[in-house]
Image (tube, rainbow, N blue to C red):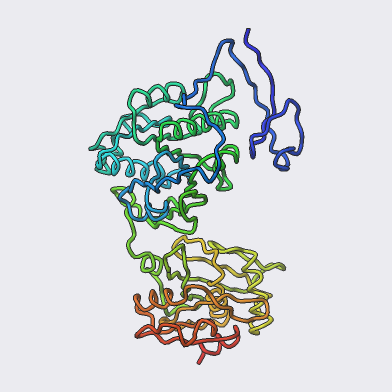
Length: 456
């Protein structure tokens, strides 16, 4: 007879128990336990991929390091984010909002690899083969050795892998795949954890590069247990609005490269197209004669980027003014507003403040602090910032402008886009600093001094 039991599984870490608890004993999160009905069929055995030899303990000094073999995709922006290309046997997880372009970019990756001679198996649990074919025709893809499988049962997928013997496997999406030996519905914590663990064993045993496409929750995190992100080698997030043309690919986890790189794409009729000059892209549409706008020189990974900081301050009709930030940390914005009032004499206590990073980019680097304060002061005073000026510098609570790293690459990027002045921390301007032709470097020590240089 089939045995059925109720278990409570944590949606965050995957911990299960026979009784309900308010707080997960494993990860410590509250109200994350959900009830699942599990049925074990008699004689049902989970298929496992056989490894050639059992694992045995070895001394670390006796391990021969392998060379970093990578398979370039051919999409430069994506290769940069991944650290140079796909690593054979790696497990990747793609996440993003619905309609942002996860399946489109994945199909483009499959097309590039297939054209280079690699065999690809694309498993879809949400679309039919005809729908994928229509997308491939729109993208002018599908000319290589790409095999399609529309299935959601894990054992059927494993059999297809054994018969096709691909170099890369794509699962679209992991939340639709299920194992029949578990009675819970597809997308549940136990199903996602079990199917992902089996695909991980498959990828490592066969040296099979595997891409999992994942759904996201309303909070922007990938649906399913947090264990899913721990198991995979690389986690890529797609950022941007589905109704806008820009897309940003960012690595949240990468065991084979940096997590600081980003890839910038533009959504067109034929899929996602690389943006060769992201700085010009982020500054497009900027109006220099409007107050509340300043340009910041930031660093994303190894790439310098110039982005527009937009600020708007207006009298509030409410007793508690609003503080809204898009693409910037709201708590840091509150701190900078206090610094602006106390150290620079610009008050925003009776005004609503809105801050926006144009282009959909999210800035975490503190080197944009000086540009944020300049844009806020410009909006409060209703005086435009000189359109040929770029701002670089972290701001401390004492109003001091602190030094930043890789200042010279920021100057070069500003000169390449035609900016004539760079306001920077004084410590970044030394005798060893390489000057850039056509760019005037203006050092400052405090926020108040930076404001006076702009007005002067």
